[in-house]
Image 1 (cartoon, rainbow, N blue to C red):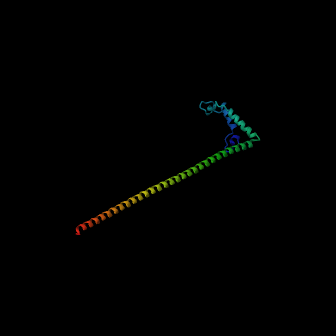
Image 2: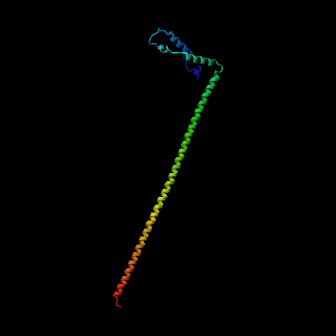
Image 3: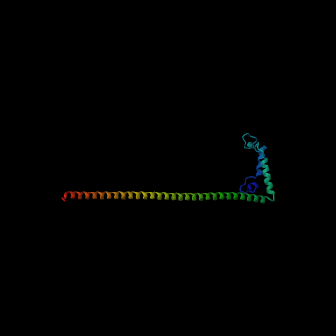
Length: 173
C-alpha cells in the first residue's frame, strides 16, 4: 500500500505526477519526430488522464497531510485485522475438519465394534448349532447301538430257547 502514498523507494522510476505530465506532453505533440502514424504515443491520443490526475492529487494531499502516517497505520491495522480474521476462519475450518475426522474415526471404530459383536454372536450361534447337531448324532448312535444290543440279546435268547427246545425234543423222557 506504500505505492498509494508515494513512499515506495524500491525503484527509481518516475513518479506518477511525472508520468502524467509526460503522457500529456506526448499527447499534445511534444515528442520529437513529428506526428507519424506508427508512433507508440498514438494509442494514448484518446486517453483521458483526469482519473490519474485525481489519484495523483489525492496522493499529494495525503502526503502533505499531518495525518498521513496515522492513515497508513490505520490502513495497515485494518489489513492486519482482515488477515487475522481470515486466519481465524481458516483455523476454525481446520478445527472443524479435525473434529469431523475424529468423529469419523469414532464412527468407524463403533462400526467395527458392532461388526465384531455381531460376528461373535454368529460364531456362538454356529458353535451352539454344531454342538446340538453333534449331540443329536451321538444320541442317535446310542439309540441305534442300544437297539442293536437289544436285537442281539433277543436273538440270543431265541437261539437259547430254540436250542433248549431242540434238546428237549431230542432227549427222551
